Amino acid sequence: MEAVGPVNEFQRVLQDKAIAPLRRTSKSYVLFVTALVLIIAWGLLVYGLQLKEGLVLTGLRDRVSWGLYITMYVFFIGVSMAGTFISAILRITHAGWRTPVTRTAEMVTVSALIVAGIFIIFNSRQNPHLTVYKILHFARWESPVIWDVLGLVTYLVGSLTYLYAALIPDLAMCRDTVGSKASWLRRWYFRAFALGWIDAPEQRRSLQKALGIMMILIIPVAVTMHTVTSWLFAMTLREPWHSPMFGIYFVAGAIFSGVGIIVLLIAVLRKMCRLEEYITKKHFLYLGYILAAFSGAMFFLNVNELVVNGYTLSGGIEMHLKDLLTGSMAPLFWTYFWGGIVAPVVIIAVPATRTIGGVVAASILVNIGMFIERYLIVVGGARLPLNPYEVPSYSPTWIELSVTAGGIALFLLIIAVLMKIVPSVAVWEMVEDHDKESGGTRGSLASQEGR
Amino acid sequence: MKKSLLLAAIATFLALLLLPTGAAALQPEPRLVLGFQPQAFTGERVVLSAYLMDPAGNPISGQPISFSMDAEFMNVLGNVQIGRATTDQTGLAAFVYEAKSEGSHAVTAAFAGNQVFAPAAASSSLTVKQGVPTFIEPEPFRIPGANISTLVLVLGTVWGLYLVVGLYFWAISRPTAQSISKARVAQ
Image (cartoon, rainbow over all chains, first blue to last red; front, side, top):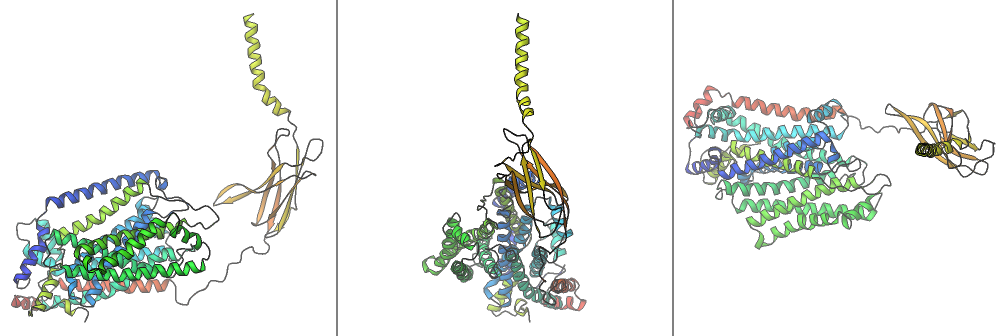
């Protein structure tokens, strides 16, 4: 197979660093993956018990039938938003600093979407194949549930396509550098998925067009997906959920938590692959600014909802607000509000804490806060009685906690596996950026996208 | 002597065992008479009247009477309590029932019994015919064009563009001989 293009020093060093995790497996990686597999096995075992005995083993009952599993579904759908969406936005706007973070973002989207779909199955009493069969067999096209299923599948296929399109030149690079010592499976895999890429002008034109379509298409698909997920709640007649604001809320919240996850992952990747030279403080700060901007948006949306609802106090909203602001949900709500929305802005705004560590800390707070926010939406809304009954209580059992831990471990495992089979940074895009900055003559593919 | 004592003990034990049954059997059975109009229309209110009397025909007051009727829910047949009332000085317990479902229904009035009187029940049939609809479904609000075809159109467009991208992938995997030679020259 033909080798791809001339290699300069920058490209050689970057290639070595990007391909290193694909060539070598460290002990810490093996330990990490083993731990994840054990957690997943435990989660599967407990899920088997739940299938056998029924949802009675969970804290879910007829009145609060959506709990931790649906919270995790909404959380992971949110996380998935940022990946592809941010990658596409940054590509369209030709944000030069994007290149080291886009691949991670795209991987987050794919793994988060897969895990989100699995959490829906966890919430069902039926065996997984029966759940899928019933969804397909009894589908009502008028139902937001079906729109959500269609949206999830469409978004997942789009995200995979987008991730793959941007991978082709890097897979060709792996094919050409992996050497004959690599296993036949590895050589076959790189050869097959590189699609015979030799950096020919025709191939570059085709890739430009494919990427151009995908980066524009994926944005409305992502926004639609998150809006439709919000409709699962907003199209019910349940008071706290039935709000036209939910679509905006979900999209803003999704970008907010997704950026937080990307920051955490690139921080790990930077250390693991020794990419300090390429993923710099600038990247963390720019992502931090996006966090701060969406923090402001979430602050505005929350205050707007509280003030409007609190002023009218229509229907059961009074009970809901009391529960949220001063009742049993208040500790969670105020932790989310101060810890998940206000504190990250303060960390990023204060020069002393505006560091890589500060942005990472802000991202951890954002994700804890956004998880709590999802829990408050799902459980807080479901708790509000539709008839004059007492407010039902819900708390997840060890069954739900174990299955959820398995789901989170699966999310991390998919990313860990992806990091072993594809370069974690977009080498070809970074090389093109570097060549452009240094006045190189090599044609830029990324800069021509979407024209 | 011992044998006679043993027989006496057994006889006493059996007598004690039978005593409650015998006492229950001794409770007088009251008369319960259920009356209401035999036919009604849906939405119409029907007064169900149950008279509770002792065997001599004297009214029994202050006793609870429950009214029930047969019902079907999701192919399961059963008996559903529709109300309760207490007998007055004349032994009358009245309950107003709003007929909701069409068809012939067996209505039952039941007295659970007390320390003086044994339980009693009486049934009668109520035929309900179609009357004024109890629920009028509002005319659905439809936006022209917002239907399944919109969903198909949106999804079709997105998946169609995915297909186009797939075709570009196919084109990448089949470079022409000319472009291969150009790439070789560049290298």
